[in-house]
Amino acid sequence: MIDLYRWMTVAALCTFCVCSNAAEQAALEREQLLELVSGKTALCRKEKDQSLCANWFAGDGVLQQVMQDDDGRKQGRWFVDDQARLCILWDGKLKPLCFAVFAQPDGSYNLLKNDRHITTITGFEDGKTLRW
Image 1 (cartoon, helix red, strand yellow):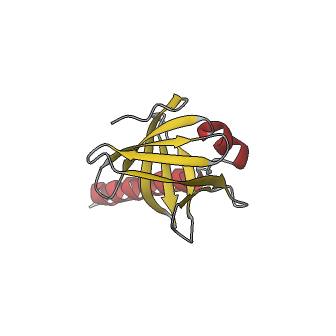
Image 2: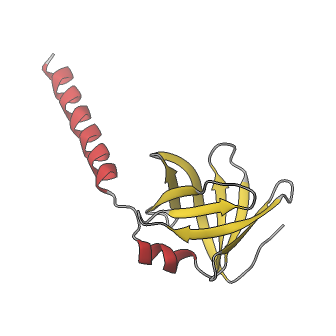
C-alpha cells in the first residue's frame, strides 16, 4: 500500500511540474514576432488535418499561402496586434485570425488561438520561396 501511495505522489508531482512548465512558457513578444516572420516563408502544418502549407510574410504586410495537397492559394494581410498576437486577415474576410506564438525546444513554433493549438510552423526560409 505504501508503494502505491508513493507512486501516486510521484505521478501527481510529475504532472504538476509538466503543467507548471507549460503555463510558465511565454508567448513571443511583438518585436520577436516581427523578426521571426517578416520577409520570410514559413513552412507550416495545420493540426486539424496535418495538411502542409507555405506562407510568405512580406515585409509590407502582404501574405500569400500555398497548400501542398491541392496547390490551393490564398492571399491576405498579416500584422501583429496590440496583444502581441500574429494576425492574418484573408482577402474577402472581415475578421482576422490571431494567434499567440510559442517557441518549442525542437525549433518549431506552435500557433494557438483561444488556447487551442491550430498550426505549427516547422521552419523558415529567407525570402519568398513558396513551393508546390
